[in-house]
Image (spheres, helix red, strand yellow):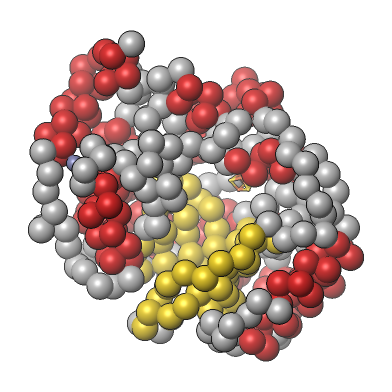
Length: 338
Ligand code: SF4
Ligand SMILES: [Zn+2]
């Protein structure tokens, strides 16, 4: 497929030291209904195998797969980062890929990470592609941790969106199977869904996210809506540079959250680069208020967005209608201004 090749052509390999983890920080999150400090660790690995083969249209990790990272290198990263633990009860572990891919994180390294973090934290969250998950892996993981949440990047439940927009070839079927495996072993599942992958109009993107939220609900304990942000050297970046992609409006994210309030899973969203030109944004003057409201909603601190308003809400509505009228997913404001 042409999209698969384009995703590969766009990338620019980044240089890195395999013995250094990518990043760590602390943020707020919910644990058993209480707001707690959550420790985030991003380990450097050889990266996502799908990013090597082709890669998703919005994923900046595709630039991180040029070098190998040996198990000993990852263990060195573990030793270094463990010194930074400050009694956070929740830890989120990311690699630039898949925690349950044995080629990326060997079973021994995985065991060490889970053992060390399970000793220190009440709950561990890891991320992987659904079709890579195996029963034995989850069962082995549960030996080391009190609570395990497995985050799965489903992105959309629409196969056409997955293939022709996201450039992913696994969908709800694989996701549901992985969820069954996780639940049978006693783990929970967080489902990531995208808001506005490329080539969708603003309205199509909202409808896709709302429908995906409802369809993924029976196979999720938490649903996290990820508004697409423009990461360098990706298909999305290529379209953005040509004025053919605008990240979602924050009003679109608000609409998605309001229309999925009826699902049984906990619904949340943390807009990366929210309020910035490469992240979900509105007009500039209301962005901070709306991003804060979305964060509060995600932490269970508010139930609706009724108190929010701004003149740009009318621009957002006109924008969505104009795309339909112009028969294009391109940014109508950029088109008219250039
Ligand atoms: S989004 Fe996930 S599956 Fe897709 S290339 Fe990036 S790391 Fe791999
Ligand atoms: Zn505004």
